Image (cartoon, rainbow, N blue to C red; front, side, top):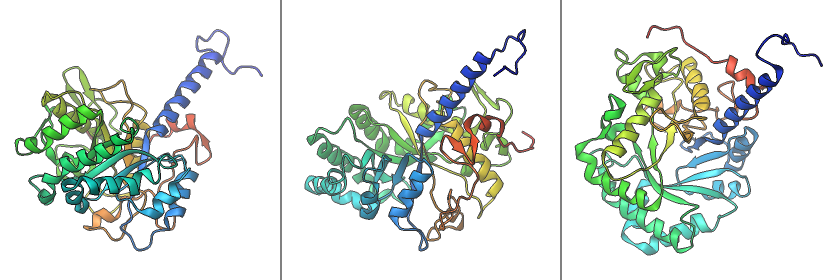
Amino acid sequence: MASHFPRNQSFSFAAFLLLFQLLTVNIITAEAQIGVCYGMMGNNLPPANEVISLYRSNNIRRMRLYDPNQAALQALRNSGIELILGVPNPDLQALATNADNARHWVQRNVFNFWPSVRIKYIAVGNEVNPVGGSSSYAQFVLPAVQNVYQAIRAQGLHDQIKVSTAIDTTMIGNSYPPSQGSFRGDVRSYLDPIIGYLLYAGAPLLVNVYPYFSYSGNPRDISLPYALFSAPNVVVWDGQYGYQNLFDAILDAVHAAIDNTRIGYVEVVVSESGWPSDGGFGATYENAHVYLDNLVRRAGRGSPRRPSKPTEIYIFGMFDENGKSPEIEKHFGLFNPNKQKKYPFGFGGKRDGKIVIDDFNATNSLKSDM
């Protein structure tokens, strides 16, 4: 078949094919780094086996599960889906104060399913803060992490299954500019030993990153395009690093905060990120669509401060959950409870019938002043 490119044009058909391959690899890389959080706080959600089938049919290859729901774990057998498995906050004390409890928890919820369930991380606690509403759990996080780690290590699986905890970004005291990121002074005695453990165990810190809440809390200083990945140019210069979106700025503030403890290099996995479609300021279907679509694309690369490795990201969440509160928490789903997509994009080699290269010509942008 004759090429559509003139012979005297430097952009050859072979170059086009190479570009196509590179773009396709980039999309595949993005898919490989994207997971979706499976929350169950709703009275109208489909059964676990149907949810796992929905993950598979939509080519979602990673999942975060907030507790060891046995039906979900059974349904995950031989699915090929990689898993973050959560230890709920109310269970931390039992695992922290008794190593036998931790061993029994790991046997029941990890070893009984491994390796047919591809458990990648165990998130021991979620968003525990030593000075917030969850402060009563704080003293138990690190000993629970250590007891679970020792139970995993005793079976020689500590290189395959990493044990960590998930924090939110309220622990960041200074985030601007990102290179000056630092943890708040009143959480350092809690976080520093956890970071030291993560360094020793070669495990990442799990961090829930929500540009939505930064934007909705300060729309005067943070533009909507910057929050939605749709700013046309760099918005914030920080020395050699240029930031075109708020997600990268928050993530690199976390990277800098870890580095600035001088404990050592610890990787970050974004264990939650999303945008609500209703229930609050800036929470619209259109904004959520743009943010989530662009977040999937973003997963194929690293951040300005750590560009060499694509960021592993878990979208929150799989469904709108009517049992959550406040109201805004009910509207983060990628899917409605009837299993229908809320947004017209996917995670596979094709998205709604269009080959992957078409996606690069379909980026949504909002016409808004910076």
